[in-house]
Length: 210
Image (cartoon, rainbow, N blue to C red; front, side, top):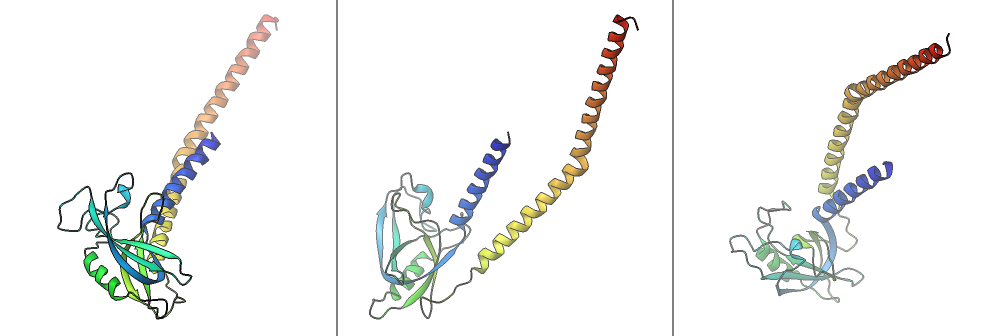
């Protein structure tokens, strides 16, 4: 039973960690190498694509803006650029066209690089053809620029405080309400056991003529 309990808890923790890792923003320092638009017909990967841009009718297939980048080590990084609208995650992004224009303006070469910070959420998977969604771009001085994830720190701190508060209340409820009942039930069973043992002893003595 203990293994089942720990397996369940580990599974829940993994799901929560995966959800947070996908949803919370991350920032990378890159150089934009170009922009593109591709036609996408989502299948099994539809969960990882936003819907149509705000104000447009939803369609199964759609054009998706891409932002092609490269980091300091010249490793490629591709972002999609889609509105999130009023849906989840709650980034309330409605300016994907403006962001694409900004990205195009920041295009630079290896000889004269212009470094930018790209804030995004989501995962990149070549196997499933999914891309993180860029939500903001701004210029930085160099690829060594440090970006402190204040928002992530705040969210994780609040979540940790909520989990701690709930855990304390559950333990307190268990100590004050459940444990006394369990102890009473245990004592009742002990008393019943003692009574049964005493009755067996009296019957044994009666048969022996004592």
